[in-house]
Image 1: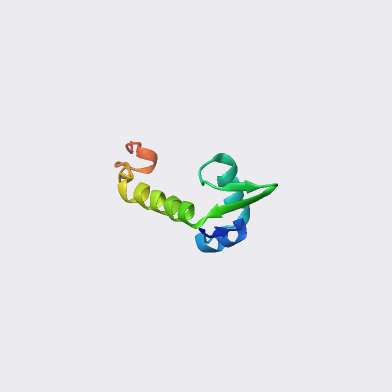
Image 2 (image 1 turned 45 degrees about the vertical axis):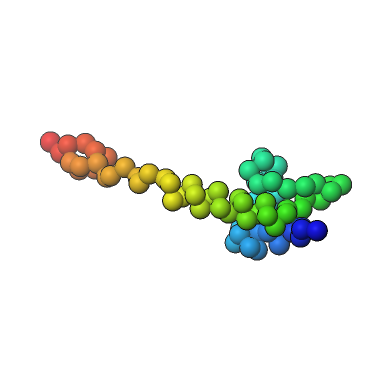
Length: 77
């Protein structure tokens, strides 16, 4: 049987708070199972979540360049 992590254990791996993990679970961003009123995260689901995050950040386009011509993109008069 695959290991189940508590939100606190998953949070430690992800370097976030357990509250963040629970929020991701509630929103469906991270897949988990609810046993009575307690969330658990399968190790494979956490690994998949991490992989998706890695793919998103490596596929993201670079931010737009800073505007030229002074502050806020306005040309100085």
